[in-house]
Length: 451
Ligand SMILES: Cc1cc2nc3c(=O)[nH]c(=O)nc-3n(C[C@H](O)[C@H](O)[C@H](O)COP(=O)(O)OP(=O)(O)OC[C@H]3O[C@@H](n4cnc5c(N)ncnc54)[C@H](O)[C@@H]3O)c2cc1C
Image (cartoon, rainbow, N blue to C red; front, side, top):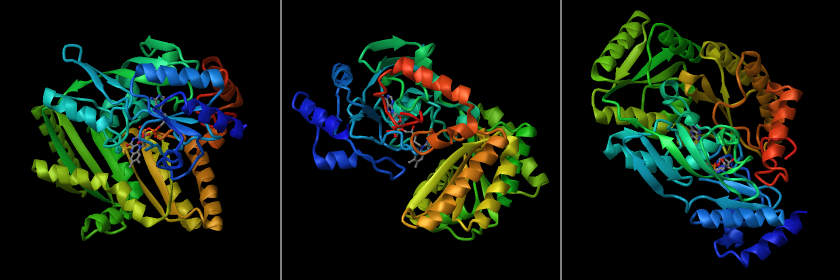
C-alpha cells in the first residue's frame, strides 16, 4: 500500500508545480520537535486558498493521506507523516488578511507565526493572548489545531477562547466558512485529523497598561507548587504563574552562566498585569504573602530586568537540550490543588527508576511538563522510561488530571487514551472521525488508535 501511495504522489507531482518529491525535502519534513521521523512521498507548499483546495481535492480523489504541517514544533508527533502520504506545509499561507479595531479581531492565514501576529498587533495597541513558549516559530494553524496554551493561559485561557470563525476544508476538498460551532468547533484541538484549517478570525485584546514581574525562590519542588496554590487561595490573580524545579533551573543557570543556584530551591515566575492600581495592589499582596511565609522574591524594577527574567523562563527548553539526546516530554495537566501530590509522586518514581528528570510548566493552569532526558539507543533505560510514563499517567488520571495539557495526543500518546477515556467514549470519538473523514485520509495514525 505504501509503495502504491508513493507512486500516486510521484504522478501528482508532475501535475502540481508546488509539490516536491526531492529526497532532502522529504527527509526534512519527516520530523517534528519529538525528534521522531516518518516517511512521506512528497511535500506540497500551497501559496493560496485555490492551491490548498486543489491539492486536498486531488489527494481525496486519489486516496492519498494528507499530513498537515505548520512549523513542526509539536511535541506529540502530530505533524509526522506515516505510511508514505503527502505533507501539506502551510508555510506559504502566511498573510495577515484584515484587522478590525472596532470588532477587536484579526483575520489570518493558518501559516502566520504567533510572534509575527504579536509584532503586527503591538504598535496598534493590541495583543493576542495565547502565547505558547514556541511562539517565535509555531503557527496559528498549529496552535489552534493543538488548542495551544502558554504562560498567560492562567488568566487569559487557551486558544479556543479566541477563535471567532474558521475557513476550513473538508477531507474531500469542500470549502466551509463557519463560526466554531457544530463540526467546526471540533477542529480546535483536533490535531489535523478532522479538517484542514485555511484561515482564522481571532479575537484580540487591548494591551494592558501595567505589569509587575518577579521570581520567587521556594525550598523544595512540591512546596513551590503548593505555594502557588496558596497564593491563589489568598486572592492573588496573576497573568502568569510558571513553575521551574531546581534541577531545571540549574540547567538554565549553566546555559546562561548564572551562579548561586542549587537543586533544593525551586522557582515560581509570576507576572501580574492590568491597570496601574490593580497591579500595584496585587504586587503588594504578593510581597506581603512572601514575607509572611519567608519566601525570597526578586522583582523586576525595569523593562530590561523584566526581559531578563523572561529570558530565563524561555531558556528552559534550549538549556535542557544539552542534557540528553532524547527528551521524553509529558505535559500532564491537573487541578492546581493536586500539583503538590503529583510533583512528590514524580520525584519518588524517577528516583526509584534512576531517571534524569526535569519538571517545569504553566502551573497556574495545572500544567506540568515532565521531561526525562535519555537516549533512545539505551534500550534498558528506555524500558524504565516507559514504566515511568505508565505510572505517571495512571497517577495523574487518578488525581483527576489529563494526559495532555497542551501538546496533544498525536502518535506518542494515542496508546494511553484508554487510561483516560472509557470504551464508549473512545467509540464515540471514532464515530465523529468517521463522519468527518470517512476514508481516514487526514493525519492517519494520530490520536485515533485505528488511524
Ligand atoms: C520549545 C517549545 C516550547 C513549546 N511551548 C509550548 C507552550 O507553551 N504551549 C503549547 O501549547 N505548546 C507548546 N509547544 C508545542 C508546540 O509548539 C505547539 O503544539 C504548537 O501549537 C504547534 O504549532 P506548529 O505550527 O509547530 O504545528 P505542527 O507541529 O506543525 O502541527 C501540530 C498539529 O497541528 C496540525 N496542523 C497544523 N496546521 C494545521 C492546519 N492548518 N489545519 C489543520 N491541522 C493543522 C498538524 O497536523 C499537527 O497534528 C512547544 C514546543 C516547543 C518546541
